[in-house]
Structure formats: structure tokens, C-alpha cells
Length: 541
Image (cartoon, rainbow, N blue to C red):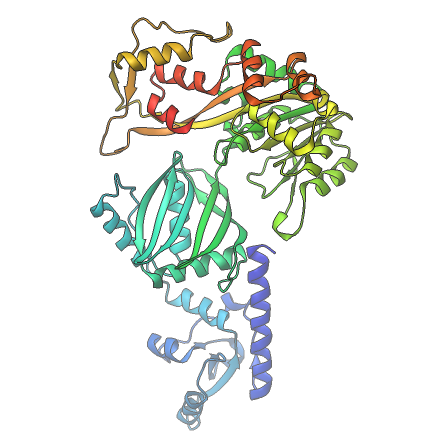
């Protein structure tokens, strides 16, 4: 059930409750959902303070033009109703009462006493947990009202292009951190009271329990405005876990721009791009993208889907959850927390006659075998898999399903990838590295394949991050390091069991001899052009 359906159901329950209360009191019930805008307030009858205190409103409507017409709620004290009856019983204008719901009363009050528009300061992320910045943002968060706090936090994360919001309970309070460009930055410390308000808002929006004593998963969709002014639907995956001091929350933000989901954005050289185009142009086979959580696997798969997305093909995805809506693609959510499985969904999807199937992740032997079977029977199968690199993926798959000659036939390409932070072009600083670093760079790049353009290693220069008031960290955005392992006859020998030992190192050496540029080599090449730093490459790899 989505947020709109939950609110509609809640309102229906509330209106029914008000109707029953009216019957008990012998009053008329008024449903203002459709006609509320037609009722003006009767002036100078009740003060705003009275309306808030007694949860009632004076209305003026044609049938009651010679009477005071009061809309009361289940929270209006009977003693005050009696007081008003006595006050007007001897006057020309009588007092009449109708029962309305609490939501109707709130909507009328918002119309006639609209809350002032509040402008909150933007969140700034601190460098090295700068105490002053943390204090300023903490104070702002404490001042954000209950109705706005969740939207405010999401909006600020969107402005900073954060990929995650972490809300962590500690002994002295609750810490809020944003993950920006792959790195966590402290944002604020908030009080327990403010945290309870925030957690209640998250639980309500994601359909989670505030009283749960176990981990939970949920999903939220919010419309936000991007820094360039575009309005988009932001998908968020919500994960909670009980800790010693309360329920911690991680909100993963999936903010894709469909126009950016292009193969040209993956940083492939011409030979690699041609290889990928050739493989995905075939009507069958299997392509896997591997790497840890947060390495950009979904973006790569979506980019491949976009390249294949045309009226001549039927594309179906199985996702947990759906991270981004792509027009022209049939996307099916798989709720594994509720007992759903990719394998069952896969078998059902194959009955729909797809040309291309993307399965969010291969997690078990059943899903792996189903994907392999599909890829040799006329389907192109795309999937992700958790492994350190392309070679390690084969070792892990074989551990999962055993030596399988069919797998050797099915798998066409394995892409291993990581994301590294890019240097801010406005502040990066050039320098000459020491001899040990130069020699290490030469060693890493000594066997680059002919398809990769080898730079001059005689006069090596590197860059490091600088600082500015606008960007104290020196990094801005991220770029992908990608290795592309083509599964040819030499690699298939390992998968068929022709070689006695199947280990990642041997597979990696064979792939490099076949012309694969490794993620480490890609990272060093990007460091030599000033796109990132050697330290960042080593941190990630």
C-alpha cells in the first residue's frame, strides 16, 4: 500500500468515526471532503484561540443564514457546546451544531489561519567534524517542525547529491551523517525527542513499525527539486536495525537521471565499447556486473538496458526494490523480505516472452541456475553479483553451483567495477611524486594492453585535493573504474573444469593476457590525468 492509499484509508476511518459520534449525540454529520471549500467562516463569532482550544469552527451556509452554524469534532468538550446553546437560546440567531472529522477541522484551520512559510538554513557538511558547523546544523534540525523534518532532510540530501542518509543512536544523542561521493560526512547531532519525531515520520512513510524489535525494510518515494531545478521522483530504500540505544536508520537514495544512463558515460575506451556493444547485440547470453554495495552496478545495468530499449524488444526487470523507473521497460518488484525470491520471479517472467531480463542480484544457486538456463534458451540476461573483481566472481559462482559446462557456454561478459571520487578541477594541486610511487606506477602499467593508450612515464605528475569555501574537501562527483572480462575459450576452460585448479589469480592473469585492463590500471591512468588521486584509488581498491 502506497502513501496515498494509506492516507485515504485513514481518512475514511476517521469520517466513519465522526459519523457514529454524530448518531450518538443526535447531531447531523457533515462530510467536508468534497464541499469543504464551499463553506466560509462566520466572522467575529469565535476567536482563533477558541477554535484551536475547542476544536470547532463557525461556518456560514445558506440553510443556516439566520443561525450560528458550528462545526464540532469528537474532541470538542460537551460542556462548551452546552455553554454556547445557553448563550444563543434567547437571541434571534440560534446555535446549530454539526459533527465534522478532525481532518476536516484541520483543513479549515489551515485555510483560515495558514502557517507562516518557514525558511530553514541549508545543511553544510563539515570537514574533520568541525564543531561549529555541526552545532549550526544541529540547531537548525532541532528547530525544524514535526511535519517538515523528514522532507527537509531528504531535500537537503538531494541538494548535496548524497547517496545515503545515516541516522545513528549513540549514548549522548543521535548522529546524522550523509554519504557524499562515497564518503560519510557528519551533519548533526539531534536530541532523542527530535529523533523520535523523525523516526515516526520515516516509519509512517515507509510503512514500518515504531515498536519493532527487529530489523525492517521499507520504501519511500518523494518528489524533489534537483539543484538544476528539475522535479523528479526520488526513490528511497529504508533499512532499520535495533541497536543498544535505539533503532538506527539508513536511507538509500536512488536519484538517477535517465539522460545520464548511457554507455558513453561509463568511461570505456573504443575497443571496450565495441566489445560491449557486440555482446549485448546478441539475442542470448549472460552479462554480470560485480562489485560491493555502492560500486555503481545498478547504474551500469540501467545504462545497458537503456541502450537495448527500443520497440523491437521486450525488456523485463526483477528488482528489490525498483531503484529507478525507466520508460519502456516492464519493472517487477521482488520483496525478498516478505518471502519472495528472484528465482521464482524469474521463472514467472520467462512465460512473458521477454527478449532481455535483468535480475537485480544473483544471491543463491537456484537463481543462478535459472539465469543460466534462460541465457542459453534465447534470452539476454543481465545481473549483478557481489564479488571483489571479475575473476573472483567465477570462483564464487563455481562455489555456489559447482563446475557447470552450461555456465561456461552461457556467460559472455563479466564487468568488475568501483567508484572513486573525482578531484575538483577548480582547486586540485599538481605535484611530483617520490621515486617509490613513480616506480610503483610504472610496475602497474607495464603490461597495459594495446587497446589502452599508455601515457609517458618519464615525467610523472600527480594531483592532490585543494580547498575552497565552496568545497572544503577538494573532491566533486565520482567516476567509475571498470574492468571488462570477455569470456573466450581460454576463460571457458576454467569454468568447464578443464583446468585442475580454479582460482581468481589464474583467471585474472589469463584475462590480462587476452587484453583486459584491470580496475587498478584504470585508476592509475585516471590519477595520471588529474581526474582522481592515487590515494583515492588505493582507498577503494
